[in-house]
Length: 113
Image (tube, rainbow, N blue to C red):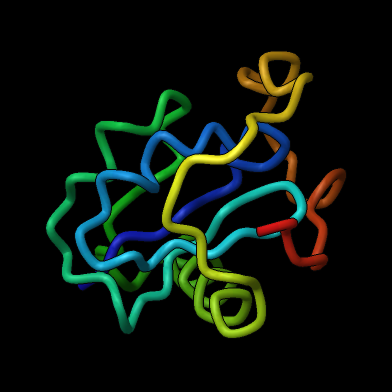
């Protein structure tokens, strides 16, 4: 089992989770982070650090979990690794409470790390 980043991270990208990760398994996209599921050691220290509760354990099985595990796996292979907290987007607070962000805002572009 691993942890994964979900839709709540999109356009927020607070990155509080990055610096507590003991194995540096976060990868940065233009407007969200992902966790490489093969690198995650399931320690869980990142989960409580996320102010928007975007990090969840992969409990497997349900359609939503499968979707996010695939998103995390796919983009962790192409986006740059991030090991320190970077700049939080200026408008992050505007998207904090918004739901259903994937279809509206998700970008496959890599981050600036």
